[in-house]
Image (cartoon, rainbow, N blue to C red; front, side, top):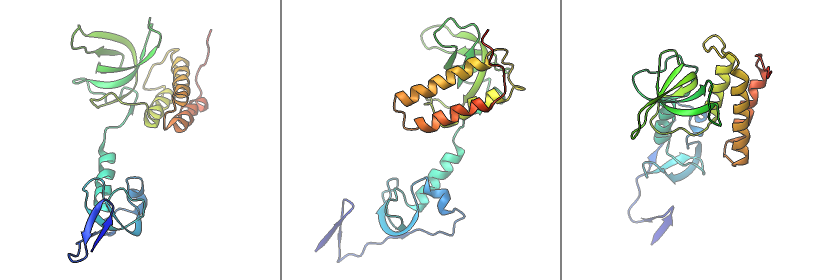
Length: 216
């Protein structure tokens, strides 16, 4: 006699050894809930280690141990940094950059390259053509290899850069960056971005800031 469950077949004659989840490990249920585990009385299969576990919620995607690994990976991942402080000058990073005197359609661009220490010269590197410099201001940056997608964290970093007039000499660029940010958030809504509502709400926080919005 067999019992089919979660895509597996278990024989009653051979008892299955299940791995229980130990809650005494320093992590709370709230810590792990957003990473695929919550307490409960159900048995499930972890999407990461593919082991059967017990003691989780009916909708758990992970066992507790793998949820802890996912939480730690999230805590240790590179994050968007506001302004230019701390930006590496010895390797390429991704940065939202205000290009002063841009002849392009956009004054703000997401670029991959090497910044100078002051965040005012950004050298974009190309594989097939010569490198070229852009002059302006680093708005925010992140130290990753793959092109980052628009996120709430990136928007928060941009708003924080607008708020911190001490670290970035904006001249008249602040309202240009704000306009671009609001247009980008609106485009996320139009495109059906899964975090569009949160991105728009984060972008609108710039309206609470006090800086020149003179367009003359």
